[in-house]
Amino acid sequence: MGVLQSNGRTIFIFVWEKIKREGVYGVTIKRIDQIDLKGKRVFIRVDFNVPLNEKNEITDDTRITLSLPTIRFALEAGGKVMVASHLGRPKGERDSKYSLAPVAERLSQLLERRVPLAPDCIGEEVLRLIEVMKEGEILLLENLRFHPEEEKNDEAFSRELASLCEVYINDAFGAAHRAHASTEGMTRYVRTVAAGFLMMKEIGALEKALIHPEKPYVAILGGAKVSDKIGVIESLLDRVDTLLIGGGMAYTFLKGKGIEVGRSLVEEDQIEFSVQLLKRGEGRIKLLLPIDHIAAEKMDPQASRKIVRNDSIPQNWICLDIGPETVKVFSEEIEKAKTLFWNGPMGVFEMEPFSQGTYAIARAVANSSAFSIVGGGDSIAAVRKAGVAEKIGHLSTGGGASLEFIEGKRLPGIEALRKD
Image 1 (spheres, rainbow, N blue to C red):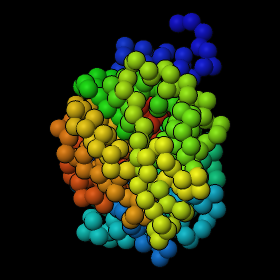
Image 2: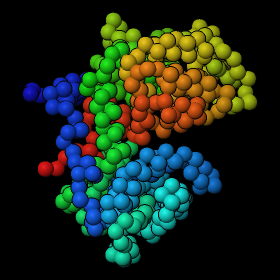
Image 3: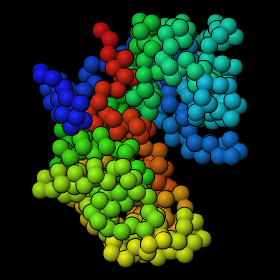
């Protein structure tokens, strides 16, 4: 196969050719409904890393609701079900701020039954709770990341997690790009492993966009930083017909084109990359950047603001959303698409005055006849706030995971499920 160079593009081409020959994951993994769960201790790794407000209340329960089919199936099949997740970044220490208690409460409401929360995810007390479980009962384990060994993929910790169960199910696509103890390590010590329904749905939808996308294929990328999306931008160059770039990352590209962007977000160390990428895309794909913006004196919903074009961005102002002309141009491209992939908002949509561009793109994607994938927490929040979530083809719960999948990378949490 030759020697792989360190150049990211060379590696992508190698992986992409392998994917086209062999496929990705969908036909090589067992599903939860292909396994006998009755009377078995079933460990379900989910992604309940939900957003919380200052009162520790869940503000978006999407990740919980999307895992309900897997959990309900395991319970109805007679499994003794343990549900495990991380929440936030407690940095390997027990912190009540990151307890899964709010999740236990919400899950109880959704399942219409009490879901007890274990005091930990391992240990003698957890084992005692599991030993007295009956078929069709559920236990939510406490935050996996209260243990530093989780993110370190520690062998002893992996073995201890594995000792809790007879069957391992991964339904946490959002954490599949991490080789952690609960996503990769423990699968080495559990004989029966499979994917949950949400995991299989994610894989199926993303494979559709990765391997045989229907043309025209339009990708929309937003968010703050170019550096977060280098790999996916490079991979999309080889597959999309049109790439629309908005959000904070657009200003690094505009600066690379010699446009003065005021105090807008610019990654100086990525300007050269953006210039090279624009050159590489020339003549191959249509790569569009914003042509007008909502600019403000400062990042404040009360600040003075106005619509400005690329040639008139005030020196001391900051651009915080795409403008109406850009919305029109982007929407026209979206309307032509047969396949759509969107990751990242078009502006600081959390502030109402700078949300209209993102919501307009959400509506354009929803109104398109294309097969659409929206990935990442902010993008999903945007389509929900715009009231169009039910019109999206697939909402991907994994921001980073979906980006790495689209790059053509093998995700450790999925690879771990490929057992004979």
